[in-house]
Length: 125
Picture 1: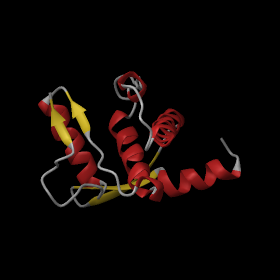
Picture 2: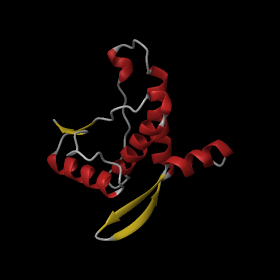
Picture 3: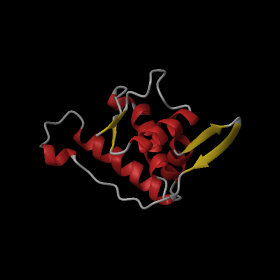
Picture 4: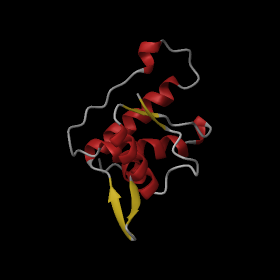
């Protein structure tokens, strides 16, 4: 974890400032969030621009309750959007509950990472 490339990656992509109720808090990634977001990034770069089968485009990151799923998505989305090799990608998050959609949208907004539009990147199935 403390290799120079990991430290630089952590400092650049795994700290956000969340503002809620006029109070700003710095949040940094836990180990599992760092690993999951980097796995998403690696998988995306591996398949970017290739004609991959549908099964190759799927993935699963398993988190338990309270483990920081929302922040993992924030870190991964932020990292994907910052990488120039991906040419400003659209990040789409699909959720299965309206309350989760609201929570994610609020978390992205609080960290200053959402688009000015009304959260087009979160879909409820």
